[in-house]
Length: 275
Image (cartoon, rainbow, N blue to C red; front, side):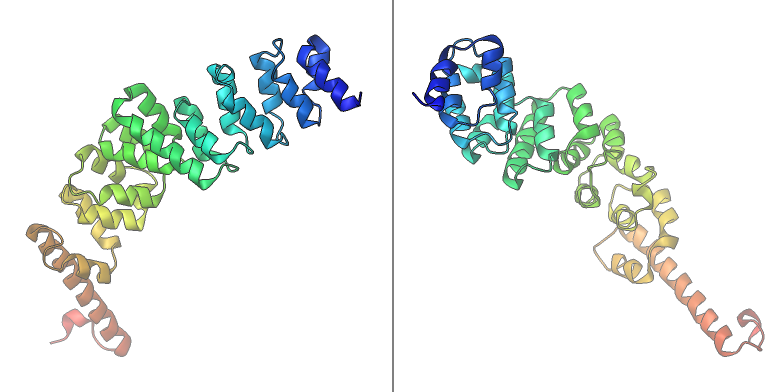
């Protein structure tokens, strides 16, 4: 009998240290035989699943055996394994806990499809999720989920989610593009140390109908004239705000004209004294 055949037979009945050694065997047949061993427990199976070079046949066989998948630890290890077949991984995502789904979305070695599906699972769970879990997601969740939480408009969550290192300018702008948006979100963004000084975010706040006038007026000196003219076009902002924008454009235009006159006539009297 060959060494592989001998080890295969031993794998079915081994216990203790012998079983532990066989977890590292290179032959697929031996590893498959280990799955038939009644002494193989969840902890040992998870050790086996930690092997990144594990043959795909082993992963498929584990996924086929429903008794093995009764253990959440095994299910999680299988879902996270880089060689687990795509369809198996997608199926397992439905059963993963919240923070394991978050880890899937943020892991660099995970495929884009798997990440997106994990994000969709998180988004689907948001409506029924308790506040405590939402706060956890607000701190650590991926960009799409963070954006969805921001759009919900809860003051406490909005404040936390804006500090999330994963949230992007695109997600903040997407939220601010919603016409119906809680004033809590507007206030949280307008007072945030990072987003309140981001030019495109300021522009979005100026455009939003729920932004306080005081906030908008404070931003106007930092907005370019070309953007002010665009915002002052009919139908973009309220007529009351439009007058402020036009006044700011007029003030800037006059200032530029006076600066141009001084440059053209540096030795002449100040523009205010010219008749």
